[in-house]
Length: 131
Image (cartoon, rainbow, N blue to C red):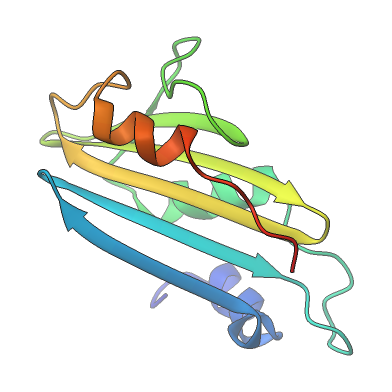
């Protein structure tokens, strides 16, 4: 978060106590899930929105540019976007369930496509959990 004042403020206001993340690497890809919600009794009155999450991702992945092609991120839970860098691709899906925001990310090489069966199984099989 170094150098990203907005992200640091957001984290310090209480989300650090109400976030969870995990990731694994396999089949040449890194799969990640993050969930965040506004904790009770803190200064945060509303959870981050889907667009705020995409904005944070774009700031944290300055080497990646959004690919604005309809359906580029494929199907699955939430709203999807595809980002490309010189040597890699980042597929992101963000959605909300109640006051919880879920972020699913798959990073792979520059040839990774939304039809990849491992990416599809990860996105299409994801079921958000009420928190």
